[in-house]
Image (cartoon, rainbow, N blue to C red; front, top):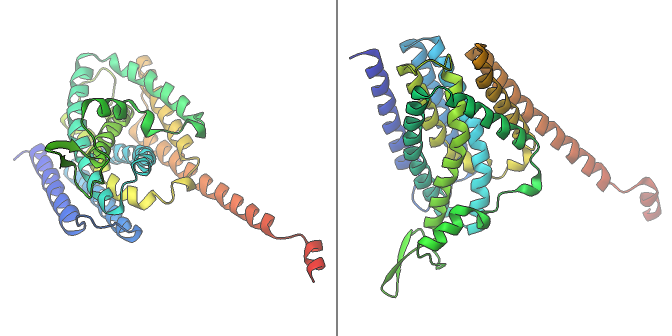
Length: 335
């Protein structure tokens, strides 16, 4: 067997093992996932991803491994934006704790299928029309600037989304309590439950986010704009996407209570998108930024935005605590 065949075989075996272990042993139907359990599952997926990176380092080379880790880190950070929207969807539909894990699982598996299709189409289009990369670069530049200045009052509203409106028109959907079911029979007619609509919205939401993430990863792993994708490039794009998306479910349960603690992560991601957009556009002038510089910049932006968010929140909490303390004259009067 060739090195490429061995690598794809190992990747497939890891995926099969991980899905059986995570879904069969670590998750049970209609069981609420605690923060502790979500932490273990998140560490499991992150550890597995890093293990595959080490495998690529020895089986391929350091460049391929670095490309994979950079792409995975970028996808993983972008997936946090998905989680913000997922939380709003689950809150809007009032999904019960026991149903949340199953709905996320099916939605994410559907998202993986669609991502594989879109990646294959995207690679084929870019191989034939290299100038599309410059279009993607301009798109990422615009998206990054828009995301950086996005206001809190522009929050996503599931009831106003097109997929919600279209699904309500096309499918027969009942408001009867789902109780873990996606289809129920009422008066000799079958209806989709709100839980089925949640799954559809999760999958479509991830597809929308993929419009940003896939061009981003393509830019990171590609050496030059006019160069065709190598087998290693395709492996990195597929594997980093799949690993990042599969870890979404555990990351959702881990972060849903702490999303408001990373107020400036959005700005950090926005700066990275602008950087990658510029990186794609300047390749028109034969200026190429190495994968190591890209990795360093991404780590710096994401880590910096998270640390700054934590410091600002601590400062706010400290100020609120001080403001709650009554002034000395009031204390004296009470005495």
